[in-house]
Length: 508
Image (cartoon, rainbow, N blue to C red; front, side, top):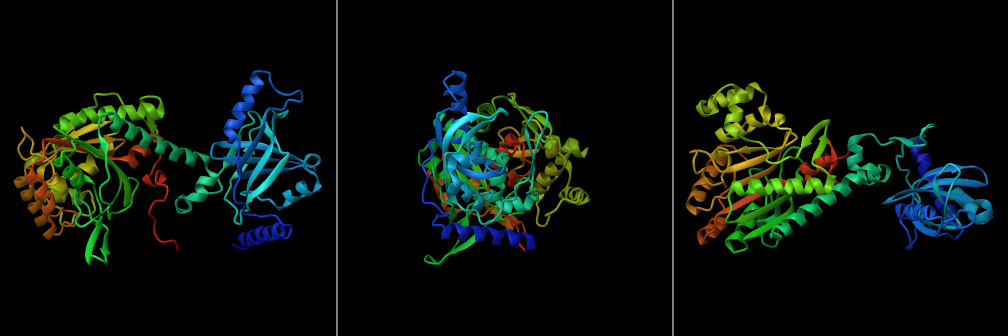
């Protein structure tokens, strides 16, 4: 801590010295002509065409970025400048800049933002470099970034960075610093943006209309989860952050909007682990005149389309496992798969036996769990981790699926599927229940579960029931966990690695 305090004091001393010399340490603007990657690409193009000047210079570039490397050699300095597109080497010479401008370099630190102007050339070591003819300070960094140690491979000339910012929780907490010193993290979030763009493009091509539904709701529903609760003072009523978009999107189907989707932030007051964060991103869509069979085909097409457009192929490596997106994806039935894993027919087991098996496996949060939730938790423990390749899990018990239509051939089950990838549920879909009388009975059954201690059971939503009474056509609906999908495409071990600012414990 003492060393850090000394560094902070030293940087503030440099700040004071800059101000005393009349230099503004926090500029108002800068007008670059190139990004670093563009400048290098254009130089190499000119070089290939043999159009460099007689002394080997390319065009003059004006670039802004952060100083991330510094190598002083007396009357010259080599530095590395990084912007959002990459990095470029800078070359400062005293006889080019003059005594005053070159002397001011002593007041710079790693992490400072500068703007530089000069021609591009290639050094004897073969690196494209900008020869600085003028420079200006854009922002003085008053706190050192945790840059790692950089070593240059003697044979290949490649830079190897040993991270100076290795503590995972600190990286989540100070994502700004994590992004600044780890370009590969910036690439993860670039891929995330690409995924969302391609999801939206696919849904638009399929004729779906993008809509927006309330985040702040008078009654939560559409999933089995505890909500975040707040208070609207002007209306003097309790409100909830949404746990899902489902019930509002299906109201739109009732209203005649036959294909709708939303990419949304949802909030569930639950624990945090590698695949759960209380704030997360969902894609939900609903399509009139379809059922869950139709939606399995749509999910296959969407998944394959986005994977190919984002990665360029159909195979993704996640945590050392190759995941192959080759339709048709295998289909298994939930109860049959669980019965095989338990070496007992789940359909013939009493609730007490299911609970004992769950307790023997030390499965947490069993208080108030009814038969459906016990089956769900046992499936999550015994079967889910094995579902590495894309796999549809079909036909869930009615107790687990209060918003899904009864299975037309298998009593006691519903027309529901989940698509698993890399051992995680990524898609969840139903033939949507559109019988308002049965929906009321399902809600009331959920209310009884709540009364017996299941805090995640759903409530009776009278307005949604009223909407169904006006008539909802046959409808297929799907929810997709965008964060988990991005985890898989970017090979990240935790959902917090693909959320810019994940929720964490209070900082001590």
